[in-house]
Length: 419
Image (cartoon, rainbow, N blue to C red; front, top):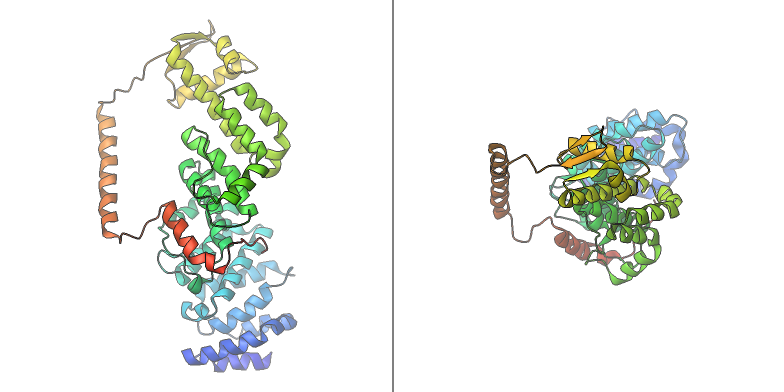
């Protein structure tokens, strides 16, 4: 390892020297794992910023181990490296850099330290990615936010416009893009922003591919459920989804297809039977929480329908119409909906009755006028910003779909499942 150290020290000053250093390190890369016990000692002699390229190869060799005697140390080393490394040097071996980012998250999640990776990964994205460009580290960053349940930390990245997928610069693969969309959908689901969640899950489903990946399958299951929570309607398979993928989805998503059809019927009893039938499937897929929310959504929609037909009802009648076990359950829903402003009513507990009222908020009130004006100004501001963009730059699903086709089909359409 002394020879390796000397070469790193001697060939790190100029760009031409670093090219020679990279060629040398590429040749001995696989051999570095044979000197795991000496790597820490060598890295201690290399200031990170000045010797980023050489340091990265040594650190990546250490990070490639499956288990660590001192996991806290490797996590600290990668964290420090991401914060201090020289972007111009690490970009010379971009795949090695992304490998480090991926291992950082993998090790951190295993060690219950995902929260500690969020800031360093955000810095890594800023260092290595161009504005508006999607990189593999975007997906790793979202994975860390999801694992630590720090959903709000992901918003600055998710809300940034992505309009470039450059496979040559970032070596990004279809799996990286799929994971970015999937994790984005999961984070927005956690924030209860179901419009955005549906959008991201849809993007994952419509990625051009010949075979159905597990990521696309998970995205489609959640797409069905978040779409209902967003619009109250049962969605169709997105139009951009390839015919072969559509057929595969229908075959393997029977529990979800039956559930959404039960929702479409507006029959709460049928929905309940479907949930009981496929309970183990939903729990295994970790979608049971969304399933319960969709059922809850149906109950609320049924209650809102009653307000359009009746002025006064008994709680017993309401509970019967909603297939509930007791009037107490019906009262619980009604009280919550009244508190949330979803219905306007008063409950006479003594008589066991509920009386529905008209919306007390006049639509010509000052508050409503101010809110409407604020929304109009937002739209005007957005329109002005869009006028400044080139016509071909867009962030809608069709554009991203075309970009993915253009940039990724050349490398093959099949998604990769192995880490």
